[in-house]
Image 1 (cartoon, rainbow, N blue to C red):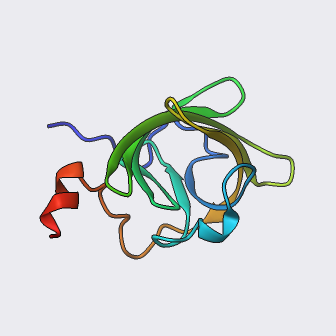
Image 2: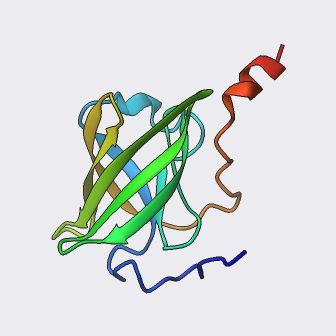
Length: 133
């Protein structure tokens, strides 16, 4: 199996890296860090998204103005997927939009962050929901 190098040239250098989601337009910001700091990685490798009860794998690609991405994972234990886009603002913060397939969408604001010391957990399977009992 071939793996993508962690610093892929596919992601523009100005947006490549880890981003701390600090604000969303639609969703309550108080719950952003429920599973740990709300983060989006855009490295071109095994990218992740974590916010609220969402854990997801991210696949990003370069666009003319920044990046677009698709994601798939779990909201709590329910499978969910969607898309997103982001661009670097003049203030150095990442501005974007996250859409849930057949659901809500929201703009977001993120600030540059360090890679977390502990990796973001894999999204749980809906089967895991029932194994807890």
